[in-house]
Image (cartoon, rainbow, N blue to C red; front, side):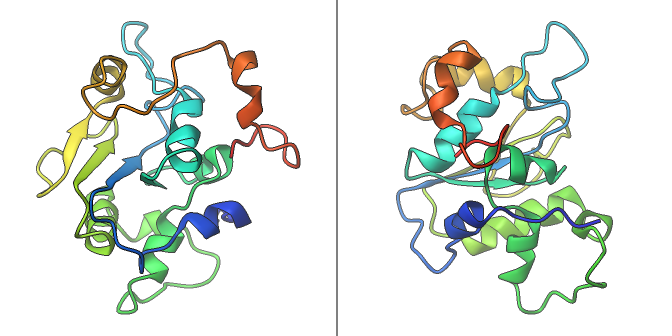
Length: 178
């Protein structure tokens, strides 16, 4: 089943715009973001509010790769938009999940092709994607401490209690950020 992309997320999908000087982020959801954190207590998850903040409050480019529920939760574009921007890709059928036909590596590689002029490309995933050319891979438990130190980007919000970040919630869709 294909997860529909929220309208505001579709507006963020602009591969025709230059990515020069910008960072492209590809986030997995499961065992990576705090809505479905890693199973080990010593492995920190990326706060969903960070994903939403990067997408909606900065000039960074942010996509959901992996579990597409993250598109709704963070109101960001995902695999459907990546594939739609590649005219040579042949859709299996309208009800299929894009992920059944493309590996995670292929999804991320195709995203990189859309934004080939980006300053940097970062993929955060519990699957090792370090072999991808021109991408820096982080596990969430490595990404979070480095991000807190400002070693990845300098415009992340501080980690705050969730109720403090309610201003990011989409008032029209409970549980979604924008």
